[in-house]
Image (cartoon, rainbow, N blue to C red; front, side, top):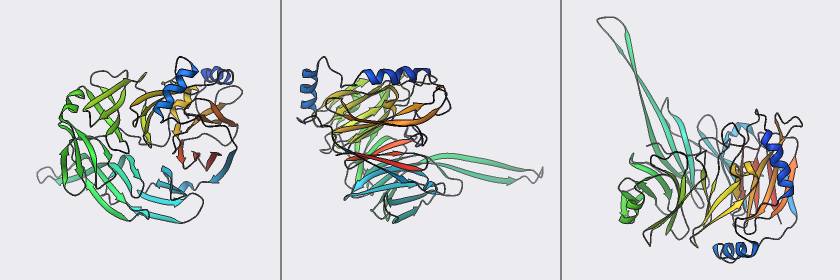
Length: 403
C-alpha cells in the first residue's frame, strides 16, 4: 500500500530559483483589495458563516506579539509544532531516522530511534495524533539484496527485492513507545479514532481497526457504494466521530481532485471539486477541515482559495487569500484565524528575498495583521500552536500571536 502524503516539509510556493512575473501583479493587487470569504454580499456571508462556525463573532484586530527562535538544523525535518498543556512542543525527524521531541523555548528533549532494517528508508510520514498520545504513520521503503555464486560460471549474481510497509507507532509525551503495528496492504487511507485504534478505508468499506486485534466493526455498507468511483488518500475524523473529511480523486479524472465528508450516521457523502490537482493537501483543526492548494507548475500561481469544511455544522465555505498563500496556510487551534505565508521578491523579480505573513479572520476574511521581511530567507512550512503560529525557516522559527 502506498498512501499519498506529505513526504517533505518544503511546501509548494516557496521555490527561490524562479523569476516570477505574476507575483508583481499579485502583490500590487493584494494592497488594493481585501480578501474575503466567498459570498454574494457581506450580510449573507456573515449569516452563512456564522451558522457554519457556530455563531462566532468576527475576531477583532489586536496587538501582535512576535519572537524569533534559533533553530538547530541537526534536529532534521519538523513534523509537527503544537501546544500540549500550555507548552509549545516540536517533533522532528533527523537523517538517522530518530524522532526528537522538545519544548520550543527550552532545551529539554526526548528521542526515539526507529527500528528499521538495513537498507530501509522512509518514503512518507504523517502525524496522526498529537494529544495525550503521539501517533505517527510511516510508509517504509524496504530493500533486500541477495547474492548467489554460480558454480558453473564462477560469477556472482545478485537480486534485489523492493517492497513497502506501513506502520503506526504510538508514543507517550516522552517518546516512550506504547504500541506499534504493521498495517494491512488493503488499506488506502487511515485516521486515528482517538482510542485504541483507527478508522480505515479499504475496497470493502470503512472499518474500525484495533492496533492489537485488527479489523473490527464495519461502518456503513451504503457509504462504499457512493465512494466506488473515488480514490481517497487522506482522511480526518471530527470530534464526535460521526463525520470523516476526505481528499481524493475520481477514478479516470486527473485534472481535478475531490474533497468532502462522509456522514457515518446518515450514510451519506458530500463531495466538491477542487480547481486542479496540483498538490492539494487536507488538514484538520478541531471540527474544521480545510484544503490548501498546490502551485501550478511553471507559473508560480495557485488558486488563492482555502477550501474549508465545518464538520460539526455540515457546511462548506471558502476563504480567499492572496494567490500563493493558499499553498502555505494554517488554521488556529481555536478556529478563529488563518495564518498564511507569501513571498517577497527582489527588485528585478528574479529571486525570493523575504516573506509576508498575514493573519486572516476566518469568519469575515478580513486581514487582521500583515507584515513583510526582506531578509531571512524563505518559509518552508507553518504550524498553529495555541493562539499563535510558527513559520519554519532554515535557521529559525518565527512566532506570531494576535492578542
